[in-house]
Amino acid sequence: MGNTIKALVAFIPGDRCQNYVVGDLQEMPLDKMVDLSGSQLRRFPVHVCSFTDLVKLYLSDNHLNSLPPELEQLQNLQILALDFNNFKALPQVVCTLKQLCILYLGNNKLCNLPNELRLLQNLRTLWIEANCLTQLPDVVCELSLLKTLHAGSNALRLLPDQLQRLSELRTIWLSGNLLTEFPAVLLHMPLLEVIDVDRNSIRYFPSLAHLSGLKLVIYDHNPCRNAPKVGKGVRRVGRWAEETPEPDPRKARRYALAKEESQEPLAPSLCPSLSPNS
Image (cartoon, rainbow, N blue to C red):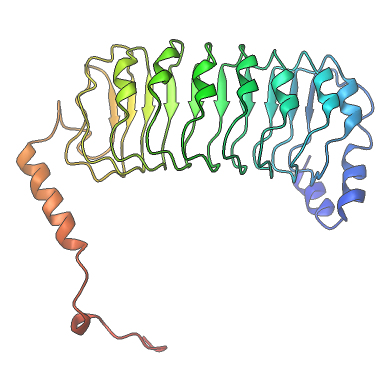
């Protein structure tokens, strides 16, 4: 949908807007894809469930908080995008779509995931970033074919040991969480290729040199006093990333002390006064 149409529908009341957007969608698209992203939807158009050969369904950036049970008819669906909606819980019907390979759930209000998610044994990519997760749901560790996990911008403080069951996992994104230590379980997953722990509160990084599959580690914006050791050819993104294998500890110590001193509050008498004209 072009920007002009999106601008127009923004001024149409909810129900009329929905009818306007999906009114012409009466038959199965030739490319087996339906994209209703950014369509101001407050309820899912049930007649789409009659497109039983549908492979891709994009519902991003709407106002959805539920899905109809008829969605179960879409047993050929491989990609489902529900990101940027108002889901507080994942609708159970999603767990009946057993051919799903990619599931986008980011930017909702999810606090957990249902145990029935384990039924999606073909899932390769799961996006759960920017939700309300305080711990990684155990059910994620039962998705045996999972290759990519996006779990950034939540409130995760640690990862479960069961994560190492995911022998196919190659990429894990954990930026913007509440990690204070590098997740120990990742040290037992040698086939990981990308690890992103940017924007956490990790102060020390253990050596990652034994992770034979590692290609990229992102650790920027952490209060760390060392860089992780990595194997030859592995790219690091973060403080001291250009130094090999890691920075001089004395330099790290000086940097940390200078950082702490610069963050000490000014004495009240030294604080500049603020006025409307300043």
